[in-house]
Length: 144
Image (cartoon, rainbow, N blue to C red; front, side):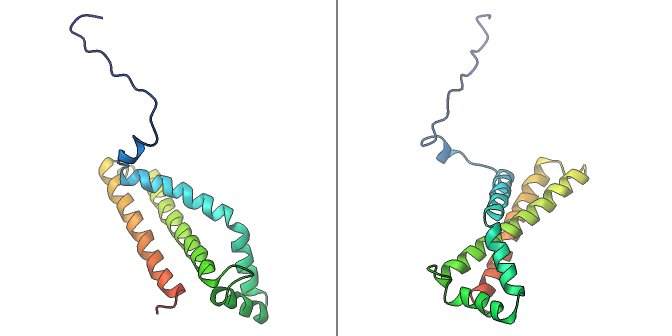
């Protein structure tokens, strides 16, 4: 190494408590992470989803139990918590679906692979999934 060459920077281990809170993740990074989180959430809550579907279509009596689960609760779980879990599933599905469409569009279109498009489509994905979740959540909680 010559005397004029700058020494290369040394990268040490990242401290999760001091370094990660100050790190600013771009919108595309958030969409990517939330896409994975929503997939895991839907997978883990699959028994609840199957129970919801089975209870809602089996008979009129089971549909009445299905509706009562959202109002009065389910076993020891209050109805509000059942609604919050359903709202989390609504967000997970919407986000996963919209982010999946975004990824498919980036795979198909060669013009879609750019930093500008990535930022813009990630922002649209986050906004659309949150807006639709708020609208469906308002319906779930009986605001309209």
